[in-house]
Length: 54
Image 1 (cartoon, rainbow, N blue to C red):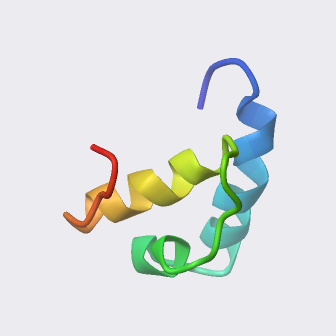
Image 2 (cartoon, one colour):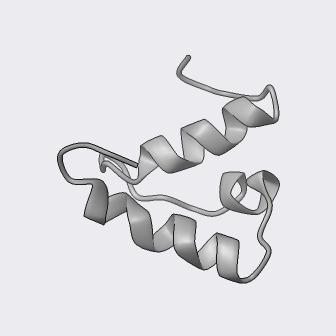
């Protein structure tokens, strides 16, 4: 991951990776709005073909 504020997103992705979380696990997790972390949820939902804002 590269970009501004990537450190705000990295913790959730690393946690999911370490505990063998799936895209579905991230997608069903509640994310506050409006925040940058919503993009992680949206990306996870996109992998599943269920993106809301794309």
